[in-house]
Length: 276
Image (cartoon, rainbow, N blue to C red; front, side):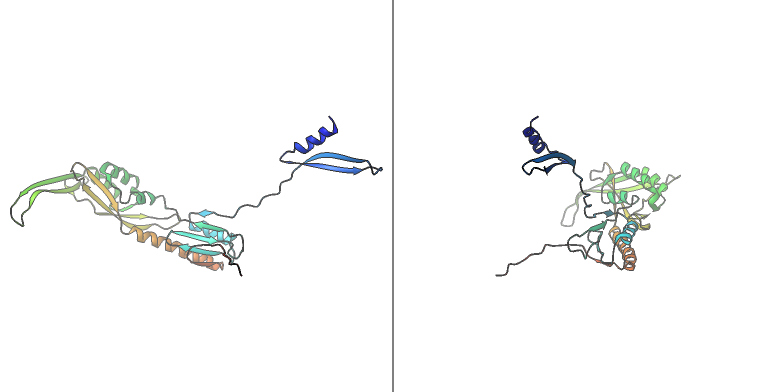
């Protein structure tokens, strides 16, 4: 291979992870120069990790992380609108802002109830659901409730009215009565209007009593029985559970001299005006 070919190969076939080295040496005779070619691997510098953007699902781990890695310049903000608690780890840093969050996760014992609220279901689906979540029901007795619901009957009375005059009734009136059957008895019993649950709403929180309305009614065509759950307590219960979680976090982090407040982090961009 000619010298020209050697130079051509050295300059054109450069690997992405190699450097080509040219070593020019001068012999005793200044007019004679020697060019040495060589290759060496590129040593890549370690790249810094990206900004921390962790998400926590329970208060205890969130607190322990901030106690370990937070500083006196860390700002913790609780947003009740989104049920999110954010910690700005580097509030005093001019360029690198790092934010970690805690988003309370629904407790597995409460989550099925949360999914089923206000959803209509046929009676067999209601029975299956009650069997699956029976240990969260404080009252009435879950086994007795399942037995009563499994033998529900709907009595429908249809009356025909054909009156005359301004105050008369015309048409059909349908009256339905839905009742269950008591255990070890042939007597019919009225079904409960509500259930009392004892269940934690979020992970790492205490169980609490929640009242759930049990609404059972006949389908408009009278051919089926449908049920649904409703609750006026759940919104209040969620707010109170979040508030208790925030109080616990703020109390412990204030001790570590971090700034805690209600709010949400937001950073804009500086706008500059030219001076003429």
